[in-house]
Each structure stands twice: as structure tokens, then as C-alpha cells.
Length: 346
Image (cartoon, rainbow, N blue to C red; front, top):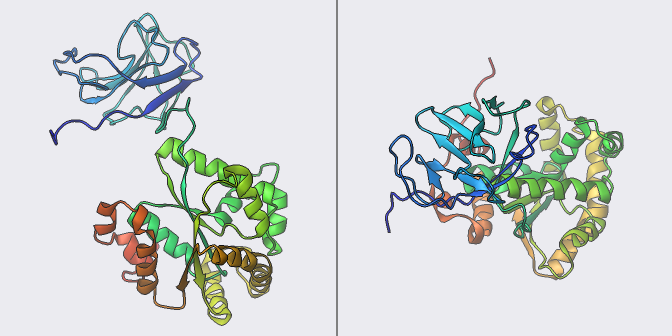
């Protein structure tokens, strides 16, 4: 096998809002036969000028590939159905930019289009996610360990608390309701929680190709589990759970220490007590359900961070890319483990 061969093009491009209906739509990996481009580069399947290339999904465009890179003009280009160029963007990016405005070319019509890259064919159902639930009392360190698994092992860390706080700060229809429940140390209603979670997971899979998820702080109640079943079905295998066990006095000490810099409205002694009482009343029954199914890995979170991380890493190794698992600790990971100080703010 040729190790220098380009990685297969498995990405899909969606173009919308261009002002030209014939440009808008789905672009699929190009099937154009190997040929020499205008700059003398010999193309390969799914590639043009050494970069990935796409055809219109409906196959109507006269030019193939219809979305490709030009070495001569150092730009990405999108064609009209008649093959004339409509939009371009000058850069050397490996993929068509999704975060900058494209230029309206000679045969284009303003406004310039929005470009979205999909890691899975949007015409098909997404692959089922590989999920590990992560539970523990407030201050148990589960968030730090999930961040380590994301930074070091390639997992996607979704903190239910962070997702809800982001939703609240966005000021949508549910913002006031989320704020009321968070400040009171109570659980946000199931219909809000599961909707936010499902939307976030689907975006991470579709747009970034992520399928391994650590759900930090979910499910916080048996009601949450009912919401999970509604989304993923009761016939699906129950995910495994990481449970971080830690004495209350240690949790309280950690939370009050964190309050000095976190800025969170619920990092105080009163909210801490409410959150812990809610955790015991609502979350522990969920833990017992998973214990009865032999789906729990219990972690003594009162240990040092390196020991806790070693246990977490081992519990995730069956689904972790071996190359990522074997790599040395990154600077960020060393900071999270307390092996390196965080840079001082200027």
C-alpha cells in the first residue's frame, strides 16, 4: 500500500444562501477520472490539485469537479451548472473555508454562500454514538477528568451543566427557566435537557466526525433516563457509567476553593448543599439502576489526579484510538493534572 496516497475523500459539502439556486445544494466527493489539472497536477479520485474536490450531488454541473481548488489562483472555487465560476476564496486552506466570507466571482450573484462541511452524508442517518455517562457529586473532579480524556484521548466531553449555561446565556425561550433551576440547585426539566443534548451530539458527529462522547452530569435522574430512551430507543444497549465517589467534606472544600475564580452563581455553600441534596435524592437512584445492570465503573475521586486519570484512561481504552492513548501528555493535560502551572494572566 502506498503510504503517500491521499486520504480518501469522505466529506460532504453543503452550500446555501448563495443567491443562485443552481449553486445551492449538496456536493459529494468527486468521481472525476484521473486527469491533469490546469496547473499540471495529475488528479486522483476525490482530489484535484492535491486537495479534496466535490461534484454536485445531482450531477448536473458541466464542470467536474464543481467545487475544487486552483493552484494557479491559490483559491477554492464553486461553479454554476454551466461550468462558469460563481464564487471563490483566496487561501491555502486544506478544505473549503467555513468561517470566512467567499468572493462573488464574475458569474456569481450576491450574497456569497455559506459553506458547511459534513463528516457524514446528510442524506443518511448518523451513526449511533458511543456514549459513556459520567456522574459524581459537585466538585468530584469529573469535569477535569473528562477534559483530560478530550484533550489527551480524543473523546468529546459534553458537560450538561456547561451546555445548559450556554443555552441560558444565549437568551432563548428557555433561558429564564434554566436560570431559575440552576440557581436553586434543582434539575432542569427533562424536555430542555435532552433536547439540548441531542442537538449538540448530532452537530459534533455531523460537522466534526465525533462519535465517542463523555456525558458529564447526565443522566441526573431516572426522568433523564426516560428522555434518553425516547431519543435512542429502549432496545439500544445501555451505555456504561463512570461514577466518581468522593466524601462530602472533600467536595465542599473543592467547591468553595473553586468559587474564588469560577464566577459561577452556584459555587457557594448554600447552593452546594442544595445541589448535593438534589444529587442524593435524584441521581443516586439512577446510579443504582446502572449498578444492577453491571454497567458502572466506580472511581475513588478522593485520590490524586494522576491516579484517578489512570483509572479513567483504562476504562475508556476499548474505544480510544491506540495512537492517541500512547502519546505523551500535552501541556494542557499536564496543567489539568497539576504537573505544570497554568500561565499567569498578564
